[in-house]
Image 1: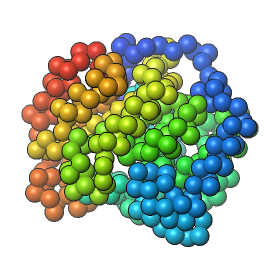
Image 2: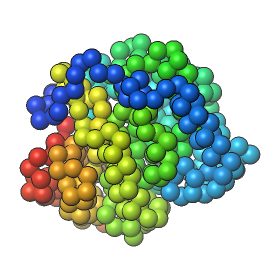
Image 3: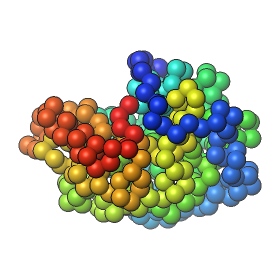
Image 4: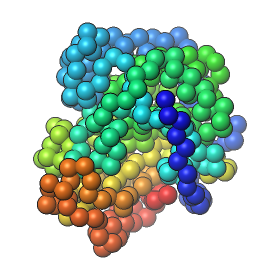
Length: 323
């Protein structure tokens, strides 16, 4: 297993966040006991006999080796783990976000910047090994455990969380996903996940099908964001500006207005929160299979990005924008 440290530097701009008490505990220490955590873990593990973890609802029996849309089997596959300094400043802090990058993904974006992870195979590890990674990341001083693309491995991840909670895990858990989530699955995470970090990728279902191979994305994403916000509310930071709890939405601006920024931002303001934390991202570049799509075959222009920022500021001046 490769232990990967990604470096960078971020300046904190957290005066607009709601500040959480310094002595606050992770949500799983406050709201859920170990017996319920064990029960939720088992319920999700049972789901693998007819998998409906994500909206694809493939209903394959992963316990018997059947493979669905995400291409994940029963065994965990992790690409890398370690303190990561490439996330948003409230997650990175000054000791890094403790990221664990999982192989495979329910989405198949033709422009995926991490396609070697999302579409490739990695080292297979045990649940006990994953628990060990989490304990190591906490021991290194990371501010959180950041689960990157975790949905298809949630039963195994929850089993690992049971182990590390028994052993004293006491930092927030981040659920870092593409926004294509099942609300039934998310409800199993109520009282466990501290920070939800979803993408809000598309407002148009045909675009989602063409670019990411997923059906019903806007409806699934909107329902997921509502459920996430119901569980954890707006993003809150401690007195040092480090995220402790809440919903933190990412929106990648695509060339030629393909993401539907206007509609997504309006939905967030009207149905989620006018003070939501949103990272409107400008880092799109054509990679993987994007060169085969004329509308994606170039970088984002400065004008397109500035238009997206203006949309957000006009829709709600109280958004917590960009990090």
